[in-house]
Image (tube, rainbow, N blue to C red; front, side):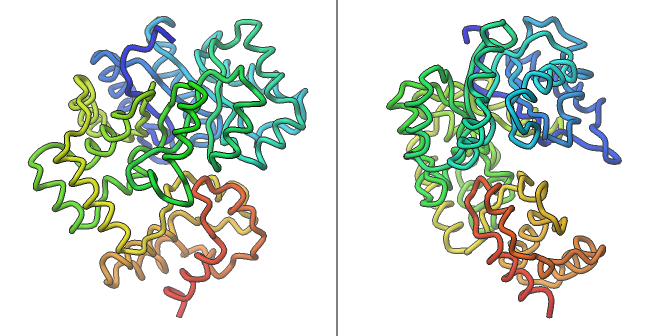
Length: 368
């Protein structure tokens, strides 16, 4: 892990897109700026952008820079294997897609009680550790979305785990659904370095309600993203904070405050507490738009988009939300009311949202 230069990483789940494809020109410019400013950690997974994240990294990073210039993390995701024998060929296809001979980190993806049971049934941890012993990747870890008790079970059963990637941000710190603080404390108990995902909660802590934005503006400092990312990076044991940047402008903003990182001061922490109080008063759906729910939906409902429209209606109470719901997001007739209550979305949701109930609420609001 000594090759890691700074505690800020490029999450490649939300790369810039143009006409349904990754905008390679802008992505190359983002990669260049990132490396030129002393950062070198890149994070991807096969499911990101339907496989286009991996190949974009091959075209924009690995084919353009020597292998020792960057740290590359990839993941084993449950959607892409059914038995142990599937894992090695899938892993080899990931190496090929990324254009590398090895990964620096390889994570068992989205671990929780159900997913861990499936991985254990398929002996996935053992298959991955065998690949590690062959030098196919350097460090073994997990990304995690569940309760602290489940994390403690996994870390107890597999002490070989070197790092844990968790969702961590100031809104989720004491949220009873996500339990970021307690999950973080389990990582500390077991002495595992932490990789932070969703520090800006899928953009929710960037696109703030106006009364929350005013609180941060009064600090006369950085962007809303800067306070969220610096908050996460300020805790002990945070090896890396990832940001899913989708434009060069976002990259440059993040570099400006992470190049010479400073934790939040007392005044800034007080302001963050004020922002949390505003959010809690809005009764918004805490969806991060990871889109894991969409992948398995038999009705092909664009759940995150419908939740975003619902949140917009809650914030602004104007006709625009109704327009976007009826004309933009459900023009193909796949409405919230088409949900058949199968529950696949809820099993996939890292936020543990009651999606079926929330879709009922959306339907009542927009489908008069």
